[in-house]
Amino acid sequence: MEVRGAPAIALVGCLSLAVELAGGSGPTEDLGALEEFVGQRLGVLLGARPTAVNMAREAQRLRAFVRTRVETPGVTPQQLRESIIEYIEGLLEKDRGDNRSIGEHGARHILQGVPGGGPVTLLTHCNTGTLATAGYGTALGVVRALHARGSLSRVFCTETRPYNQGSRLTALELRHDGIPATLIGDSAAAAAIRDRGVNAVVVGADRVAANGDVANKIGTFQLAVVARHLRVPFYVAAPSSSCDPSLPGGHLIPIEERPKAELTHLGGVLLADPEVDVWNPAFDVTPHELITGGIITEWGVFAPQELRQALEERGGN
Ligand code: MRU
Image (tube, rainbow, N blue to C red; front, side, top):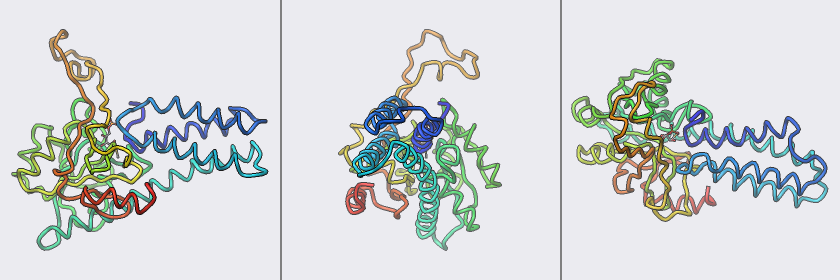
């Protein structure tokens, strides 16, 4: 949890490899040995957070890139090393650009669905901003884009128990940017949506399955159920790098379980019977039929059932 947020986990993981390579780690004389070193380092990173797909996808793509370079006639180990570093640096720029596009597509789509074209009040969950990505954010990118247009009345952010990414990170980002924001307890979400004029709920994703089911921070599923009941559109903002077309449905996404102490303790203070049984999943899966607003990607907004085709047309992602 030193680094968290699906895109940031992949980016920091890859950058850590770039730092090692730039510092001279790994074999210097032999292409095959350098390829093996890169593969081994990526293997270490893969176990970090099983629910998010981003690290696994970037590792797969980086391995393919290295293979192509190794097979290119005349490439030296030094050139291979430099090209890997350059490739990894490019990921940062791509993620920032993707988030800007997600923000614009999401803002436009949400405003189109509102009588009079806005301004709108949103509700978001967990942290999906600059602190979870290379910058700007996914769901928080949509919030930022609406604010930049003068079309955001207010955003409600949930505290996001038990790790409090909402109160510790999202509230901080929103205050930093001067965006009108109100922090609420997770248990206040249904009342806020109904009684405070929320026009749409926008959350991020750790992994989107081929059928549009979405794994995201625990509590996302119950927000989607409430939004459906109250007929408020529910959006997921996710770059294509968070999509996993190899998984047919969300039931196949591994869900990370976190330590018991996250629930029994707060700031080191024991709040519960120390012997109580605890179930602490970090993520849940929202079925695609509850994603009524759509899935906002860098390419546009898709109904969950359109996502598979969009990924296929653009070559996976
Ligand atoms: O456990 P975390 O803090 O890594 O969880 C983060 C989330 O669930 C985010 O909503 C998700 O990774 C999307 S980040 C753009």
